Image (cartoon, rainbow, N blue to C red; front, side, top):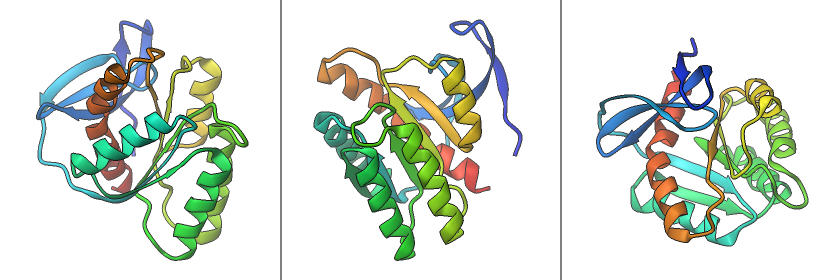
Length: 191
């Protein structure tokens, strides 16, 4: 699987590209800042069996779950409040041979942060033998060089900045813009 790179005006360098679906169009965006780099027409997406999310903010968990289900991007969404709860839920699903098509992890959570949870998740996957589940790190933290290096270690993994605005309408808008990307990333990594 080759990684497409394009020049991002915001980052000022060539960057890996995400593909998201928004308003019936495929948008190629910077994996680090989310800046739109290219737009094309999209095909109909499919529904994931299960997406597992972890965020310490209840509002974010509820918004993510609601949007993923309402837009029929997932048949089920499992939400957790920290990395330790996430690992328990993820391991339980794999042990029961239940699918997980995508993971959305906040970077900064109590008990166990998103980076540590991703490390443990990859170890759990190695034990149960499924293909690596794509990870979407979803955080207000800026994607710096250290985080870029982490993304490459957890491949397939991407980062989306959820913004620092506390207005729920802004978060809903950001989630809505990125929700199509989630399944596209899952389908890309499965091939």
